[in-house]
Length: 352
Image (cartoon, rainbow, N blue to C red):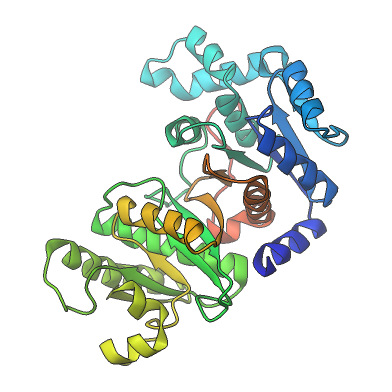
């Protein structure tokens, strides 16, 4: 709770508007109630008002201070439909299809985010990842000079000897199944940026493998080695103050005694606070195991590289998890351009 408590304190000083497309989902309603009660800003729920009201009544949750928008009856529906059509007409989208899309809460919420009617978006509690990401990639897209969109889990464990006082940033755990060398390096850079932004510390980034410094030979090991070297070069060019090392096994990355046996002269080994996985299988499995078996608090997926801040939370998330994700996304929005210079600029169609 130390990490997320600090995030909440930061957000209380700069409250934000967060849109939740799954407005009648019980955990979303509970998180939205807490978001308002903690003075974090204005939660915006999308959905049919009567359904949201009925769900809130069943949970004995007050809707005071919570904004509810039904896309089907919104005064912005026509404008949003036109703007979405202008974004996608070259892809063959028809005007009727643009309107149908805007009737879907995830698309409507993404357009709210694009049009500065919300500062962040949280979805995924009852939708699969594709349903959350598709509208964001079509409407928000990636930030300027960013080539790879990915995601990060922020994990908080009881053992403060692990990571940064018990906090680990783990990626990519939700977007790219089998990243290339370039993509893996980009994921490492983006996650390091987020860690530095959220904690104000120097990221120590471990690119993980089943091998430590050549203890095994395999093409996947070579990919991690190449990505580590590329991440270092990119970080140097960007003047990003962070340390990168790889390939490292997970124990060598996290446990000082084991690191000292396996390698020497590393700024990362034994004290990593950012873990980069070689593929989506290993990243997603590790996060789920850490949450279920290790009882870690998990906050994510925080989407990296988008032009506006958003997250795709897990369908297994609790209301507390969702509140934490919303707080992280909202804090990002306070100075998002520090993460992605040039982000949050005018989107295509905004000046039409």
